[in-house]
Each structure stands twice: as C-alpha cells, then as structure tokens.
Length: 430
Image 1: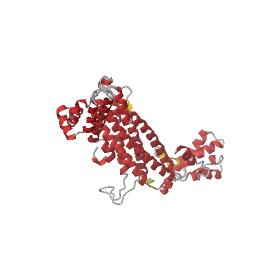
Image 2 (image 1 turned 60 degrees about the vertical axis):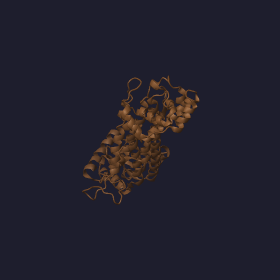
Image 3 (image 1 turned 135 degrees about the vertical axis):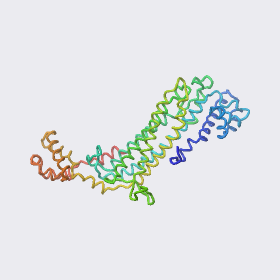
Image 4 (image 1 turned 90 degrees about the vertical axis):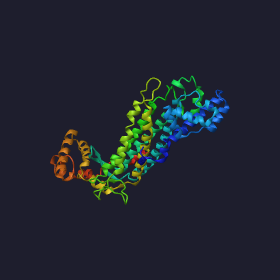
C-alpha cells in the first residue's frame, strides 16, 4: 500500500521483518516440541531457540539464487544456528510455515480492525442518541417520503456495523488456523502433536483436514467479510455526500481553517473525505473475487494463490484500517444542521403526511382505492402548483364530506402522530 494510507500498527504486521519473525517463532516451537517427544536432541532445540535469527538482505540475495523464499530463509537462519541447524525445519514443508504464519498475520489484522469497529460503534451510538429527536425528511428513491430523525438514521448504521463486528469475530475465528502436517497433509514426516503444540502457543485451532495448505475457503470468508465492511463504510459515505449537497446541506464534513476545496473556486467545501471512502471501499471489495478464486487449487496444492495474497492481504487490510479510522473522524467532527433539516422537511408543504391522511380516510369508511385516488389527485396538484397541501385539500368538496377541517388540521400539523422513536431506541438501538 502506498504511504498515503499506511497507519503504523497495521503496516507493521505486513512488513517482511514481521513475517520472518513469525516464521522463526513457529520454527522454534516446532523444534521445541520435537525435542519434547524425542525426535530431535534437546540441545538442538535449545540452540535453535538461542541462535535462530535472520537477515532480510541476505535472504533476498539468497532467493535470487534459490528462486524459493522459504529455502532462502532456512539457509540464512541455519547459518546463524550452526551445527544443530540440521534439525531446523525438521519434518515440515514450506506451507506449514507460510500458511500458519499467514494465519497469524490475518488474526493480528482482524484484531486491529475489531478495535476500530468497537470505536466506531461507540461514536455512532453517541451521535445517534444526541440527534434522537432531530426531525428530518426520510427519502426513498431520493424523493421525500415521511419524517424520520437523524438519530434514527444513525441508529441504522450503528446496527449495521454491530452486525459487521459479529461477522468479523466469525472471520477471525475462521482464519485463526494452524496447519503443520507435512507434505500433502499426511503427517508422515511430522507428529500431529507438533501441530497441536504450536496451535496452542499462538491461540489457533488445528486445521480439520489440510491438503498441503490451509484450504482457501477460510481466507475467502475473511476477505468477503472485509468487503462487506467496506460496503457499509461506503453506504455511510454516500449518505454524507448526498446530505452535504448545496441544495440540502443537512450534514457537512468538518472543513478546517486552512483547507482548500478547489484550485479554481475558492468558495468550494467538498465532501472529499466521504468521496475518498467511496473509492477505498471499491478497492476493499475488489479482494472478494480473487480470494474466492484462490479456493480452487490443483490437487493438494499449487501456488496460484500466493502472488494474489502477497499483494492483496497487506493492501486490503491497510486500506480498511485507514477507511475505518477516517470514518470515525467524519462521525466525530461532522456538522449537523437541524434548521436545514426542518426547512427541507417542509419543502413540499405537508405532502409527507399523505399516508396519515390515507389511513384516516379508510378509518372513516372510504375504500383504500378511493381514498388513495383522492389524496394522490390533490397531492399532484399541490406538487405542480407549489400550493400547501392543506390549502389544496380543504377545497376538495368530495374529500371534505368525509373529514372535518379540524381533523385535517390535526393530521397536517402532526398532532395525531404516533411517535415510536423512543420504542425503537429502547428495543433496537442497544
């Protein structure tokens, strides 16, 4: 990932030094367990633990000759171990180290993202409660529908990200896998107790039945969940972008004192952070299809998945971490304009009460079809003439035979409202 989007904690997980450190830790534990069960001398395990280290530059140089990164790594570490290096990487194959190490990196990544989501939920809930009663128009198809509150809108996002947190928990569990079963997964050259020992030390589970690799359906699940989180981020970002439009200006990203919106137009205040999140979300979702295609490997293994994962795993993880951090920033600092929400709510002169009127007329004895037809005719007239809905309705003689002026006023002034906001917050936004 380019430096613009790197945040140190998650970037460090994917640095090559961390990868080789994890590999070394795995190899030390393998040697340790092999010595416990008498497969290799105890002195060998002690020497491996004491002397095993690596040099990235030397490994890179060796890989140019070996054309195999794990062999280059083994040769480099063996040089530092010395005589007992013949028991280093004993009975295991490359994928045992690569895949278990990869699981650890993904687990570390998942834990950082989990922390970000928990912070996001805290911020969303706080803002949701703050604007619990702040009325605004709800829109379907981008068109005025019925009133909601801004707090309820945020409550929808709160619950969506709460589901994302639950999904991520499952994804972390799915990927927290250790597989040390030797060539083609038969344990012919490595005792199964080694796998259990390493898994326990790293708080992983043993693979049910590996081939020579950890089956990639696990990874596909993990990256699919990251993709869903990316889509939820974009849904929020698009909402901000729409609500910040000049014609609405109900919500706005914070615009800092020295910030510039345009090189040509000094007046511009653009929703650039939300637009950035839309782009990042597209990129995060782009990992879903390759991760699913990686499930399909030849027989017990091939390496067609490897190049994809080397690029995809760090970049997507870093992009999502950055996106969640930016989303948190937007939520914490966004400006909310209740007066504009109220103005826009009343923009169509009361048309948003059409359903309440429909329900009232059917209660008064009209068929739903006739009631709907009367209201729609008057609503279209109000829409086209810009007259208030009330003024159009009170002049409809057919309508006024069914309903009184007082009843009409009560509906259009929202005196008959059945506000369930408190119930929703009590029962659904927890």
